[in-house]
Amino acid sequence: MVLSKTVSQSDVSVHSTFASRYVKHSLPRFKMGENSIPKEAAYQIINDELMLDGNPRLNLASFVTTWMEPECDKLVMASINKNYVDMDEYPVTTELQNRCVNIIAHLFNAPLEEEETAVGVGTVGSSEAIMLAGLAFKRKWQNKMKALGKPYDKPNIVTGANVQVCWEKFARYFEVELKEVKLQEGYYVMNPDKAVEMVDENTICVAAILGSTLNGEFEDVKRLNDLLVEKNKETGWDTPIHVDAASGGFIAPFLYPELEWDFRLPLVKSINVSGHKYGLVYAGIGWVVWRTKDDLPDELIFHINYLGTDQPTFTLNFSKGHSLFSHLSLSKISDFGSIFFNPKFRVLNFLKLFGSELEYIRDFPISRSNFKFRKF
Ligand SMILES: Cc1ncc(COP(=O)(O)O)c(C=O)c1O
Image (cartoon, rainbow, N blue to C red; front, side, top):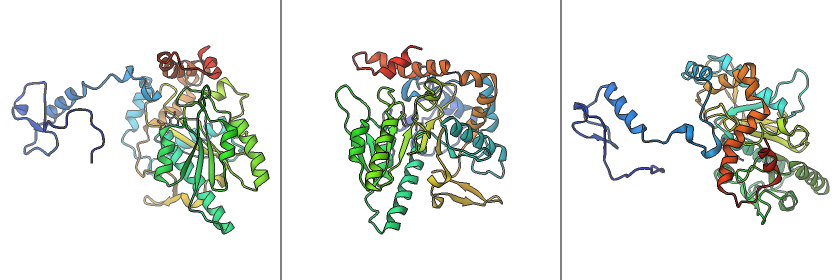
């Protein structure tokens, strides 16, 4: 079953806009052709069809940016044929990913000793990162319930009703009940008090959002942490927190360094962030980092040795392109690194993405935190 439909499905042939002997007879759309055509003609036909797509540079949808420095394009093209999973073959690629994970873990104040390395992985985006984080919570909770001799077949997760669709996917795909805190008139993010009321013994974690998809507002992770610490003390549970920082993880540390939302809060056990939502990065990169090694159950890590040495992996896919890792490492060491990490630049980019959308919905009550963003 093909799920998406953008053009008429009734046409069985490809309509070409250029004249050539190769398109004298129409080319089938849904079946292999009887005869082959030269690659130059095939290229032209497909290229012409693609011209009917929108212009990516004008696309502000889904907050993902569409321009990168020419040097980054070169790096991406130089690495586009590498399969990231072949770590023995591409050790430098693995090293670049590890550097990024460590930089991000430090940025989010992971409690790392001087020589300790961070725990995390590069993903396709925040959605994959959230699936992995959610699985780690589910498995940890199951292990705990098994050890206590209690039922472990009805896990739930508490979120605001404003969560991005990837949380609903996680819940449905991995059979976890999604308990959503309803939004209220004038308050369009998760109310931490209500969230903590909904927590029970089967709650694998509470997920808070830093940069709500609906209006960009930060949820109050500090209050959530404090309330949950109290509830855990009263009940003997140890319900943890995940922060979905897809759209705010690279904003908060620069603009609000004093805001406690990350691993400074003891119950925050994992954080995801999108790499591609802040400018200068094409779609296809996200991250998840865990507070400590203990927060990622060992049995979720697969050890593969197809190419010789033992290589641990925790991803949903096996094969994966790696080209964006080199760009991101570059952005941290070069001149455009300093631009990339310049808060003002980031916020301008963020505003270009979020702010311009908000312009369209002028009547929407915009929270104080959005006004703060708007000042830049
Ligand atoms: C809060 C939040 N979480 C997760 C996602 C999913 O991110 P990605 O597109 O990187 O998978 C989004 C995307 O808009 C988001 O806003």
